[in-house]
Image (cartoon, rainbow, N blue to C red; front, side, top):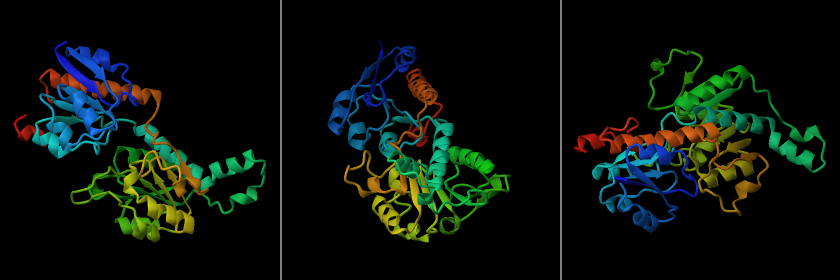
Length: 329
């Protein structure tokens, strides 16, 4: 084989179809389970490309490479990669931008229905032999309620379409979108503060960013939670650190908001002693919203194909750090 590609998160993403795809570019696939910067440096120092899921690809890791050309991430978000460092070193960063639209939007809708109808709480009561529907009080009708979407990319747009038959009225906060770009007059664009005050359900779909004009790290903290209605619910299928966990826990304990449905947390996996795990007004799932068998096969194929493109001398079709082209790479 002419090239070496390392899958650095083989414990979570054990390769399946990737090996045969990479062979088209005469690339051998090596698997590793990296848990530290040192592990990553050791495993990838002589790689021509890497496949990554959760590992943090830092400047120190990137600077250690002798010849690596591409970081291909399984998924949409690239918050685990130091994009500036990759660009400075002439390394392509790719994602799979059309990954799991249906899966995550379906999960968001399932959490919306679960928390508003108190499905998990009632299941727990029934399984303990308590048959009393009065313990669900209060539950409010969905039809006519306001669903606020924070960010309005492809997944959030899918949520909006799926929410429509339930009679939910959709409002959106997204500083990167012009309302005039959308002909659907049923979607109302608002500033964040107004959306927080107006919405009965808020669903988060923003990427995680720490810098720039509109950083999303701790976008939702105590001030934002206090703006929400005491009858409102918060849904997060995006990234855990968009919401300040300590403030959310307090909001749920003290009744600032009615409940939450969370596929992601600020710390994953959470500390077993985290009080949010014990609250009855929260539905939690283990960052699995992107999962179906079909989606995970597709993301493997597309991530591996990005590496094949680069090793074949092409510009990858899902290039994230487009500035790398201006650096002459």
